[in-house]
Image (cartoon, rainbow over all chains, first blue to last red; front, side):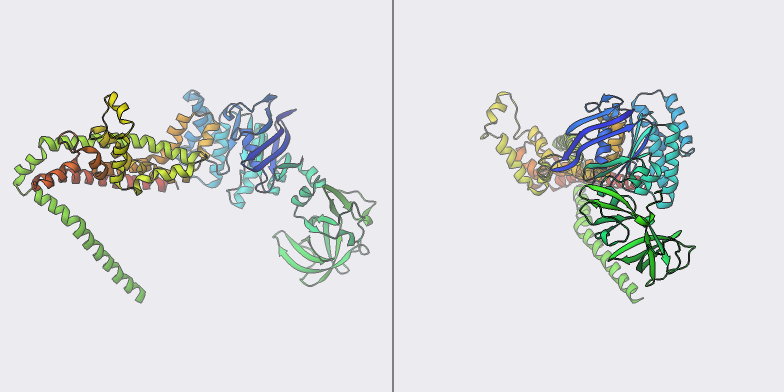
Length: 353
Length: 276
């Protein structure tokens, strides 16, 4: 059952059309990511749900009730801001207690709740510190605790990991995912990082230029991009303008444009491949990027620089070397449609991603 | 090495220039004020300071200053809040107008009020029928003082509020805090030191205001004479002991304000460092 719904939402900032006919439906207890490039309108959607912005038209429905005219503070929402917006002149304890004090909860109950949350976020003993005396990760967790303190039904997070360094970010992602699952609270978070969205979210809503492009599970988005934008945005796709020149791909539609993801491509040294010996195409390696756990190989094929991943355990390939490229599949794009095309030499086999 | 030596020469030259400059233009005159004030002995000084009109002038100065500071604190907070937290048409114009008293000569500020509330003004009959007198009366002095000092507090607050942004207020609002609570608990701690600093500057300026007040006062001894005006009156009457004795009151007040300023700046800086 849909818990949070947006119906035909439009929003302008002066002349800028920030949200165009937004329709979203989010189920109770789900962890949903709003994913899109900056300026795509994802934060605007979040802020409208929180009541920080008013839509020009359309309805926002929470738990079956239209909440357009209900102030954000009465919508049962916890909000984690991008830079946390912790109250700088209050201690950690006072920060977490703020929402409860505003609601005039008795002080002994506040104490119990704050203590409970501090242990939940592993920040016991930090209650007397000021936000400036915390690390980035601790600040984020305190912001999370502060948003949760008044027991909201919905948790909204605006770029929750943007201000944290890479290593801590990975830890926090896992931590946040566990917390939200444990608390079973409907959560929506905004991100521009597809890895983050794919790893953390149950469901992803992709936004672009104020519109919702597609929503679905990470697997669905990955497997069946519904629009050219999603095909290009998810995965580190390389665009080619002349896919009809590639062998073993049948034409679909009028266009000649396609997207190829690195994981769709295998690179073989000359004579290395037995299985695809006849169907692979020759390409010249132009660049090799060391990615730590793997190599990214860039090779020129029919005038396009195609990216491919290669394990570091396989025989070494050098720049300038002529290699065999085998492309398993690609996304053909024409107008507003996307087709998944599979290398026809594999026709009999099933596609498994 | 060479560079270091050059820097040292420059450093001491600059120090010498600064001290000579301050000595000639500030310390020497201040010493002279004290010496002249005490020329007729301590008794003469006390006599001059405790003169009925001197005390009345000092009290009027304090009255005008207190009213101006209270009014400008309220206006300054309101204006700074409006300019930094809301988007509206005419914001630039408003923010420019707030600075006007700094750029306009105080004499002109005084004349503006004479024209607005004086006998030739169309407002005069209305005010007169209610028995309200503004020009050549205490209200005029207070008005002039408010006018010349009104940018001081908002100008201190605007940069602080701009730097802080609106996130914390939004966070508080989402948790259901009302405007008063948000201001008291979230915004005020941020602007506390800037506000105090603004109040100090405003007080110092209000106490010393001469130009605009001079135009509006009418110079009625014991009625509409503030300390600076009273000093001028004594000076014009060749009563140097009296003039410098009265000046010393203003100097003492100025030094108190200066010390307050130092303390506030120090404490504010400390808290700022803590919250970086």
